[in-house]
Image 1 (cartoon, rainbow, N blue to C red):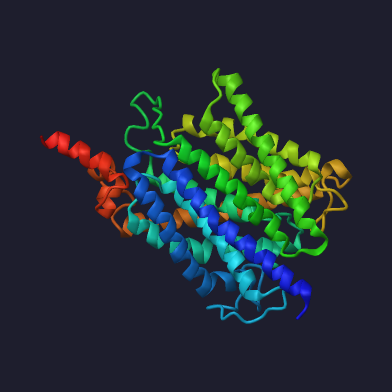
Image 2: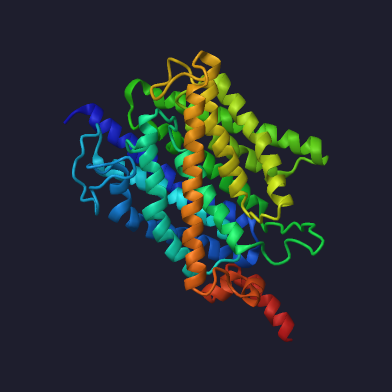
Length: 420
């Protein structure tokens, strides 16, 4: 058997494992960024939605993205994928697992907009529909040979396909679910509902940072010439620039170096470089990450003022940074590295690639938002609401939705104190 086939398969399998392990990062990030009474719920729903989305991706998602008999909208074969070889230069089952992992990350981002107030039953139905008709359509347009691919849309590892798609679904959820109890006062001012564990949040970011090497460098799906090393280098530089920029902008504006902002800066740098990591020089990766770190700070403040309650900052980290990262290749893509599309504005390519990137952001973002909004609006009508009752939200989703506490010693001790 060809050595390159074996090496490519091994490398992409490692990438798939790293991407799936990012779910551990999301569990710690989301649980740490929210209140203790919802921690077990957040951890459990993340595992459940990944399992459910895996089955949906196997049944229809992979076929809609990469299936044959394709049109500009979706592919039309390879449903209930059997593991047959597809002439990809590596083992097709490994490629399937790698792509499945990306779908799982997208749904995790999307359901971040549900945090601390949505019914578990809503997670179930929305996960099925998002994994079947939202994510695969955008992925086909850009990665599966769809109409944006034909226009030369550059999105190497998914600033648009994964992050913006997930963020726009989260946006639809935050609008329909409305803010958490106690988030906003009658005069419109906001209250900070502090996450219960910044150490968890920081550890979650570190796990995500490491997993991103599978996300971006793994997307080379090849070991040829060791190009994955260059992609990993750009990824790390952008993350570093993002965290530095976010720390300093919060220090300057707030007078204190805000830890959540700093952590979001690292993630924003990673999200932004995801589209461009294979198309830009290292200096540009630093610029892209630095801008993302500043952008995530102001984006979070923008949504806060407009009463958009986004507990895990999905709209800013994955949405705003995803848009910037996608557009950035229209400025910084070099002629030598632009294996898809054209060189960017700063390299003599004019506005052509920037226009394609803008078109991709606008159409993909609108599709994800509109379809997700329709799905959730219908569910709201059919299921008697998306949100748990006020009493259930106050007591926490751990006990109201699952019948047990994520931190039983803490809450049972409080109950004993009240009853005595």
